Image (cartoon, rainbow, N blue to C red; front, side, top):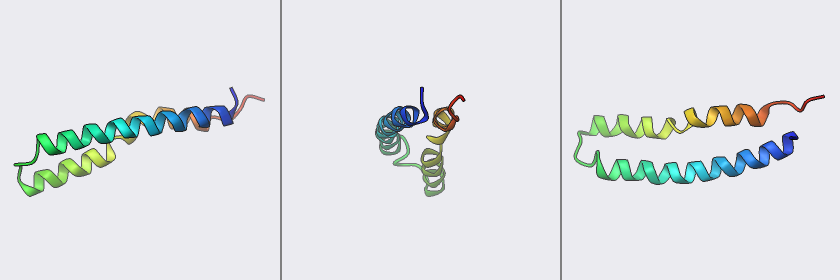
Length: 69
């Protein structure tokens, strides 16, 4: 599979994943931490804002892999 095809597939998967993850993060933030202290809310928002990168790193590495010669 060529790099262009990998990037197209990876981009579509990333957009779908981030859309579903955003809904999940909003549900967690709205339902679980609404009554938490401000410091806890801030920490949870920081973690939720950064943790989406972890499951997407293998996909990003796969997308950036060079074509075989």
